[in-house]
Amino acid sequence: CCICLEDLPKNEGIVQWASCCGKGYHVECVKNFFSSTMTNEQKSKCPHCRTKFSTSPEEEFKRSLVWAEKGKATFQCKLGTMFGNGRGVEQSYEKAVEYFTMAAEQGHPRAQCNLGDMFYDGQGVDQSYEKAVEYYTMAAEQGDAVGQCNLGTMFENGHGVEQSYEKAVEYYT
View 1 (cartoon, rainbow, N blue to C red):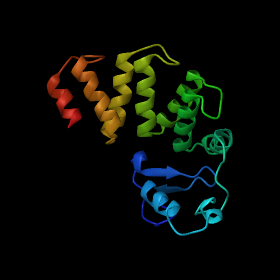
View 2: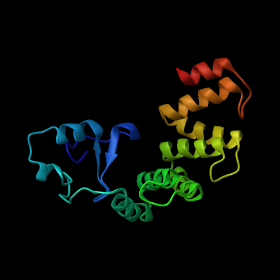
View 3: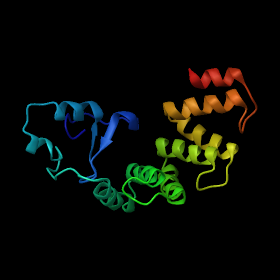
View 4: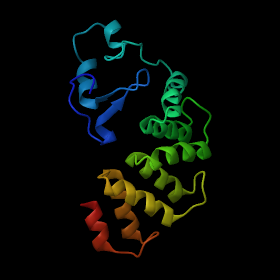
């Protein structure tokens, strides 16, 4: 973390990444940063590189694209989300799948889970519960709670797997 200098966990839910310098910090550290007594001018800049934070989704997309093109999985996943939601860029499920796939192939658990969602819903890909299970499993095995929950749902409903309440409970737990 570029604020507290502790190691960053793999869990994307508690880590935030700066698109200006590509550095990461704990979400809790960011909250403390913004609630501190520093001036608004100081709070408007990255605590690591002191570059002004993005002021629009379009600017955030452009900055994140630089890191994604350098192969940084976190930013590839972020671009997948931006394309999927049409935030800062024209909405495209196909481009979302492309970026999620890049990150998932590097072992990024949230990208794997998101790619599972794309297969589950048939967004940008042919709908496939089996492929959704494959990607949810990859994420779940890395401890991704959303992937575990989604996999539990697949077992509960028998989508892409043999229905099993026992397996569902295992993943929910």
